[in-house]
Length: 149
Image (cartoon, rainbow, N blue to C red):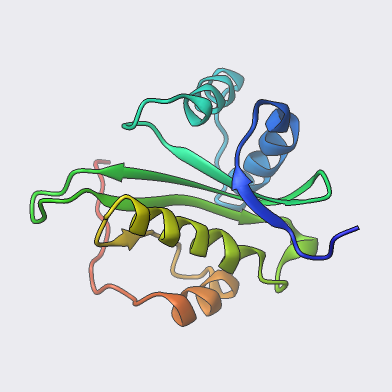
């Protein structure tokens, strides 16, 4: 048995473990989505539309330990697309083991491959555990997020 997870793209057979992790991720942010959204999101993650999200998972001998969803999109200030890392989740037992860092690095590597000059993400101000990692591998932006009420 391996002790280091493999970071790889999501596969159809990952559906149940992916849904469990995404449900836990959404619960952390005190939100829920209907079952139809799980179905459509999973289908999009496996699709080949370059405008849809993609997903990497951390796989340790068939047990998924984490996931990340990311998307490339156009940016008015750049000729190249940029990469938005929307979701990052590591199971509680995998936190502090490098899983989150490895998933982010996989997104960084994919952004380099796609020639995207930047990768960005959002988190809640009080997400102190994740921010310890983010402060080591990213740069905090001064921007504040606003949204339609």
